Image (cartoon, rainbow, N blue to C red):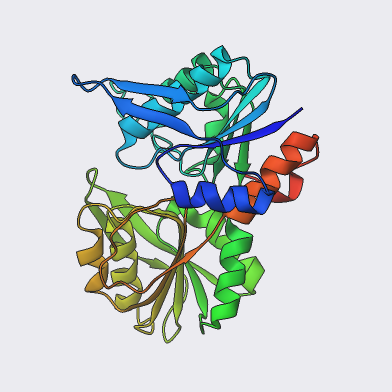
Length: 312
C-alpha cells in the first residue's frame, strides 16, 4: 500500500521535516475560503487505495485548524483512500475530558466524535493533557511521548538542574518519570485553579532549598501555572536559575510577559506548535519530526509502537 503524507497549513515546517525524514514529499492540498468565510478543501493528487497520514496540529486558531483537518479527512475518504490516520501533534480540547461543574460540554469527546465522523481511522497525538483521553475515542489512539527527544536536548545543554518540580498535581507522574530518568529528587507545587487564566499556588511539597529546579509540564499556555510554580519554589528557597521543559509551547495571552519577569534561564519545548512569538524568552525548540516519522513508518509497516508510547 502506498504511503501518502499530507501536511495541513497549521505547521508546514513540521510536515516538511517529517516528509524529509521519511523520504516522502508531502502531498499538496488547496485550502481557501469563500467570500462568506466557508472553508473549501481540495486534494491536489490522487490518494486512491493509499495509506494516508494527515499532519495537522489543532493549534490556534483552533476551530479553523480543526475544521481543515476534518475536511481533509473527508476529502481523502471520498477520494478512495484505503486508510486515513490523523497525526495531531498538539490536540486541542484535551483538557476538556470531563465535566467539572455538571453543566458543561465534554469537548474532547465532541472532537473525537467529529474526527471519527469525518472518516479518520486512527489518531496519533503527542503528550496529551491526560492519558485518560483514550477513553473518549472509538478509533485507535496512539499517544506518543516526546520525553526522549527533550531529555536528549537537556543532556546536550548540560544544564545543572538538581530537583524536578511538578507545577501541579496533574503533572506528578510526568515529574516522576523525569526524576527517574535524571536520577533526581521530585517536588510538587500545590496549585488551585481559580479560572481559565488564574491559578493560585500554595507552597511546595518536597525539598527545593538551595537547588536549581527543573519544572516539567505537558504545555505552556498562558504561563499562569508555570509562573505560580516558579514563584513557589523561589519562595521555598530554590536557586533563582529555573529550567522549564514542556512538550507544547503555545505562549498565548500574557505568557511571554509573565515568564520574562521571572529568572528562567532556559525554556525547552518541541515544534508541535508553529508561528509563536516568544519575544526575548530563552526558548529552545526541539523537533518531534523524527518521532512522528518513526511512528508513521511503523504504523505503515504494521510494527509495534511500544517504546514510543506514553504509558499512564
